[in-house]
Image 1 (cartoon, one colour):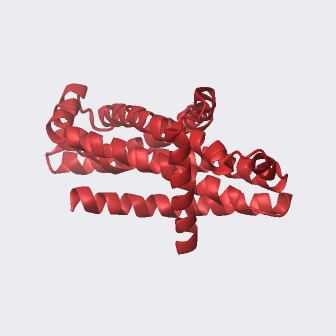
Image 2 (cartoon, one colour):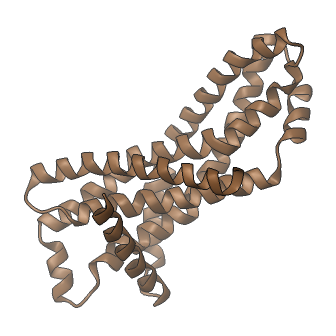
Image 3 (spheres, rainbow, N blue to C red):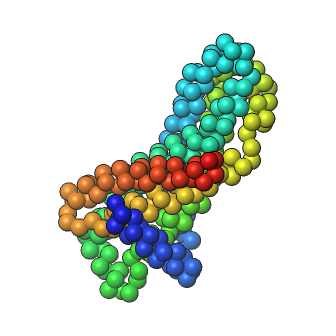
Length: 243
C-alpha cells in the first residue's frame, strides 16, 4: 500500500509538470470531463437524492416527537453538505468512471501502446494522466454542488409528505445552520476526491502487465483502492477542518 501510494505521488508530480508545460490539449480535457463527470451525473444525483430521502424519513418523526421538526432542514443540509453529497457522489464516480479509466489505461499498457509513446519520446504518464486528473479536479466539485442541491430538495419533499413540514420552515433552518464554510470544505473534498479517483485508478491501470485477465483484475483492484484512499482522505480532511 505504501509503495503504491509513492507511485501515485510520482505520477501526480509528473502529470502536474506535463500540465504546467502546456502539453495538455483542451479537447482531451473536455472529453475526459464528459466521461468522468457528465456520464456519472445521473447516478450520482440519484444516489444522493435517495440517501437524503431515507435519512429525512428516519429522523423527521423523531424530531416531530421532540417538538424540533423545524430543525429537520438544517440537520439534513449539514449532513449532506459535510459528508453525504461529497462522499456518495465521489463513490459513484469512482465506481463508474474510475474503473473505466483503469481498464482503458491497463488495456493500453498490455497492448504496448504505452511503449509506442515512449519510443516517440512522449511521457505516457503525462499523456494519459494529465487530462483525466485536470478534468476530474474541475468537474467533480460541480457534480457535488448539484448533488447537494438535489439532496436538500429531496429532503424537503420527504419532510413535507412525512410530517407535513412546510418548505419555508424547512429552508429557514437550512439558512440558519448551514455555513458557507461547510460548502467550501465540501468543494475542497470533491476536488481531492476527484484527483484521488483518477490518480489511483490510472496508476493501477498503468502498472498492469499481462493480458485480458490482468486487465479485469486491475479494474477490481482500482475500485477497492480508490474507495479505501477516498475514505482515508475524507477522514483526514474532517480531522483538519472539524476537529
